[in-house]
Image 1 (cartoon, rainbow, N blue to C red):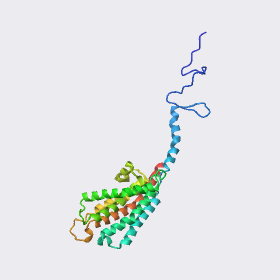
Image 2: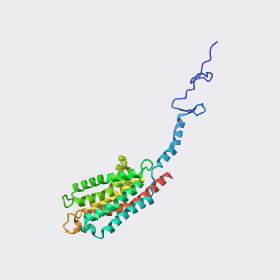
Image 3: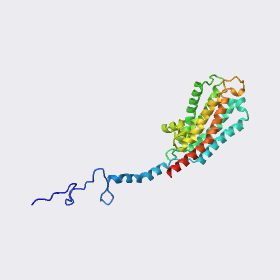
Image 4: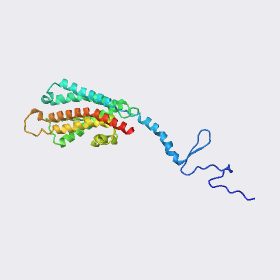
Amino acid sequence: MREAASPPGGSASNPSRPHQPPPGASEDRPAGGRSRVTPPQLQPQRACLNVPNRSRAMASVTEISAFTAAAAHVLCFAGLAAAHSLAGRGALVSDPARALRLLVVCEAPVVIAVFSYLRRDPKSCSFFKAAARGLIGLPVGAFLNAFGAIVLGAPVGIKYWMVTIYWSLLMSLFTFVPAACVFGASKIDWQNVLSHSIYFTPTEVENYMISAPCHGAVLGAWLGAWPMPLDWERPWQEWPICVTYGAVAGHLVGMAMSPVLIAVHKRRVRAKAD
């Protein structure tokens, strides 16, 4: 007798031959032992089920609100106010080294503590690790700021080396230490912080919190250096008095703008989600 031809793709009458899923399909084998084949067109829908897992992983990153950023900047402003109160009015002109030293001593622990608390991933990075990154970043940032200032024309000599060190440490607290505490050595985050494009493109909240005061301090120091070569013969034209006034003023303006930028960013994100 002639055997019946088996249909293509496997015969149901041949139980010894295992079932083969079609090309591109995925096969799930639950605990019961019976396999279930997912067609290729349904696999993207199955992949979407992993979105809550991604959101839970991102939830471990500290979410910064405009109120939190404002509170952090208020604490940093309190450190500057305390240093100004201890130094006295006009101390930056009469004794720049002492005034800058008090600014660094009062501001450094506040900045390191605040931004270590607001570190990027609290689960994988402890508070003390973030504080250690800030302590390491303080002299590194001071060296870079001093080098940039000298390249741009800051005076070099024994008369100015002490005030230059204190000024560089203060600028490091304004520009380098916050990012070191929050981001560590993340190259992408540092590029975002240093770039001006964050004001025109979507970015993360931490970038606004750190970049606005940082950019304000650098821009203020640059504008504050303009009166130095003029022949007005005023005592505040000496290095680094007017530069420090400009850096502090720009830093305060950046701190005031930071919560506003964060609030606008969050509103924009909610509008896109709706």
